[in-house]
Image (cartoon, rainbow, N blue to C red):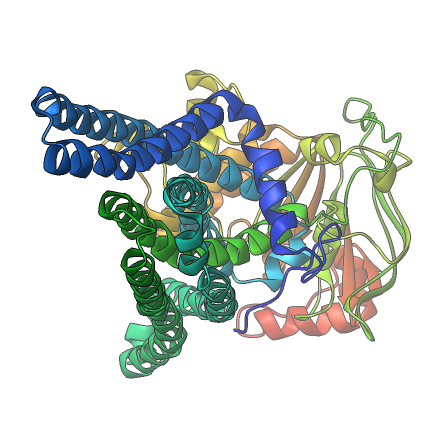
Length: 605
């Protein structure tokens, strides 16, 4: 599956420059940590000053101890060096601890913002992008962003301050030598920027390949039963190895660009040293430069080589982080299309059996342009009645559920609950009024108790147990190693298919919603459990409005009304007996299902 770009309505993909992205990062995520950030900056300034002081101390060392041979400073100057080193170490520790704490906190905030945005995405967008891509953003981009904050932006500030302080020492000693020493600085800056662009391009490509690799890994693991059953291990291995090789290619490009920055900086620094030595020798021969001044100047210059050398590498790290920040902000800024309208009200429902009627009025919808999923569907589910949706695959049955839950908005037409257009009420109140049980139940990798309790926040233990008993799940749950505290595993795979389905039904029962959506909720159960659960569902459906997607017609023989769908439209409607007597599509489907068991009868059901 190819990576899908996630455009942002606020942030065009290439609309923000590096400075704008850094500014936003600082504004949105460091503003709340201003005190810690100021302390970190002060530590950086203190460290830079102490580094400059070390270089400056070489002047009295060479002059007072070696030239003037002043015994009074024999202990004082070395003590001063020790004090400067200790103070610089304290500043370095404080700055590093604060920077890393700020960086980790920022990443945590960014991840929270990403998930807040992600969890509100429309189902269409979530379906369009593989979950592996999102995982890659959360992990890989978050790491790059942390590196950019802790090593990149903060490191650039520290190294730049240190270089400026040392340049001040150099100018103080001899401004002419300083000019000779900085001639290579613009070249270093240009080189760092050029390498940074290469790094950003390589990082963007490696990020894309990381997402692809994550997608492939998740698909292989999710489909492990099919991989094993069809002996697809070789194909899976080839696919993963290809993804690793593609990702490695771009990672190596980035590594080479990063590795090139240091030798280039060293080479240019060596040229600067050669220029300074040449000019200093000339000045000394003409009596315009004392050797202790030259010693202090060279110390400052050599010390400045390290921050300048680091600047080129740190710019590469910052560039990678800027690319990650662009992708992170794209994800954060993307807004869902299906939202509460201005002035949306709570869904007002009369208590059953008086209320909760569902109506579709000439509803049309397409997932893809030119391919309607539902084409002018009109149907009604009176309050407290059981309505069945049957028909071949692709007839639009699941789409009706999706539209009623507002996972998607209809292209035209109107969907009502008790006369209220669902697009005018809050989605929270709409979805609170509906309980859904799907054909393939999904359970979280948590306890059985937690999975049932998701049906109703704040449910008591007694209510959870009652729901499980009603769903014919209590007996097998208590037989599990830890009973209701048993962890069900990824997707509930530690339970059988029938057990998962009964836990999901218990969750829906606990929700106690006035509208039930059942997508063949008993399909995974054996005969005995199906009978028990069907009896429980019948009790639950009493007085409530129920829409059932039926793949097995035996489950809807008692439906108050059956809608037969075909190619996105209602082909037939009526009771089981009426539809059998009509001899249309429903009768043919019924005959096909039961031709080996019983004859077709107009009175069946």
